[in-house]
Length: 225
Image 1 (cartoon, rainbow, N blue to C red):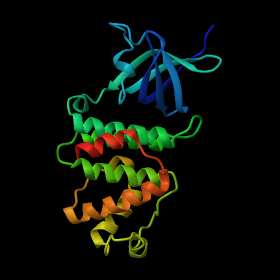
Image 2 (image 1 turned 60 degrees about the vertical axis):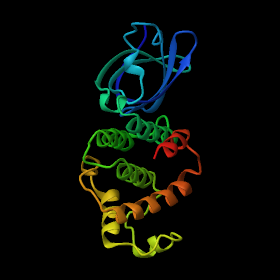
Image 3 (image 1 turned 90 degrees about the horizontal axis):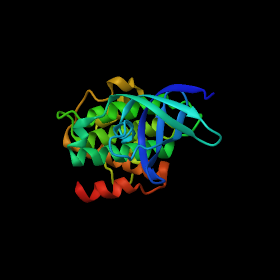
Image 4 (image 1 turned 120 degrees about the vertical axis):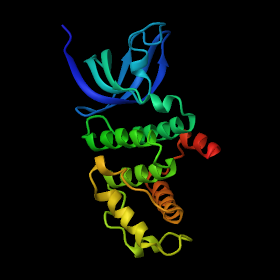
C-alpha cells in the first residue's frame, strides 16, 4: 500500500517526461524543494494539466517511490491568472521562479523562500507597484534569506559599489526595510526613480556575487525591458 502525503507548495518549473507525463519542481512548506512526476498530465483533459503549470500554488498529494515522488492529486488555491495574461509580468515571474529553484534544496527548511516567492508573484499582479521595484525587493530579500546580503546596509557598504554614487537616505532605509520586515509587508512602499536606480545597482552587484550564474529567464526579460 502506498503512503501518501499532502504538502503545501508552489510549482517552480515543469518539463515533458515520456509521452504524456510531466516532471515538476515543487517548493513545499513541509519538504523543501521536491521533484515529482505527474503521470498523464499532458494528456488532453487531464485533471493535473493546470495544476502542474508554473506559479500554481496550493495543496499537492504525493507518494514516494524508490527514486522520486509522484503527484496524484492537487487542490490549487491560486493560479496567478493575472500573470498568464501579462507576458512581461509572466517573464518576471519565471525569473523569480528560476532564482528560487537555483537557491533552494531538497530537505531544507524553505518556508521563507516559499512565502517570498508567493508574495512576490502577488506583487507582480498589483498595478500600483512597478515590476523593476518588485524585482529589486525580491532579489535583495532572496540574498538576505540565504545569508549573502548585509542586514544593516550602510553608506560605506554602498560606497563599495563602483560608480553607484552616494547613497540617498531613502535608499538605505529601503534596503534595511527589505531585509528586516515581515515578508507579508515587503511590498507596501514605492520609491522615486533615483532611489530605484540605486536599488537596482545594489541588487545587480550582489546578485552577480551571490549567484555567479546567468539565468535564462533573465536573458529573455532583458530583451523586453
